[in-house]
Image 1 (cartoon, rainbow, N blue to C red):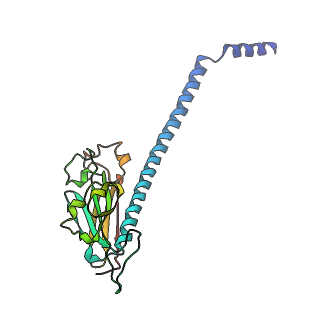
Image 2: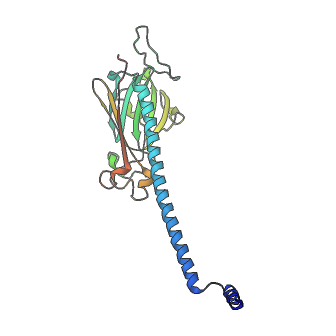
Image 3: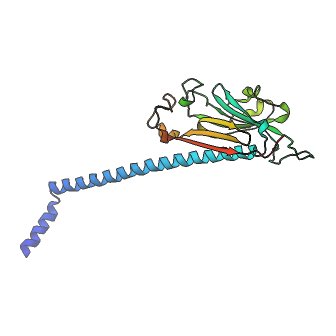
Length: 244
């Protein structure tokens, strides 16, 4: 009995053997690999979810801002097109600066402003391909701009208002501009279509933060070089309630 106790004491004093240390280190490395791998999977899933949520929030902002105004316009006032790579749509609105609609004594809309939604590239070299190539530039903004209706802006005069003004302060020097705001970013395109009853808006956006980790965004084609799951598109239709 005394021999066994002495042997155990000697072993405790001697410490761990080399084999035991190697086994312990191997187990430690294995556990760390599992933890690190799980963390990478978690972070990838978190980034994907966060990017999708951000795209969803931006779609909601565009949809709300667009629908609220278009619902009160008349189809006959809507114009849309593309100028130098900038998609745009404009229409008349009876809403004043406080959001109150105006009508005359016959119930017809009393137009207060011309509303313009348009896409525009950011400043700098984020997009290095030609300006008329949507499929190379997912960095665009959608900007909403309100112009005094008395100026009677139409498709022949809209170009001068398609500027990189992200808020009302920046637009202060533009004649007749009442309000300006960037309502979305990381936009690829914005297309409008009208028919006798409604106007439809089709918007495409990119999960830019994810795509930039794997691709040279701005230099490669979104149409052929970046997988479709990174690109989100949303289309909806709005029926205007007023007429001229």
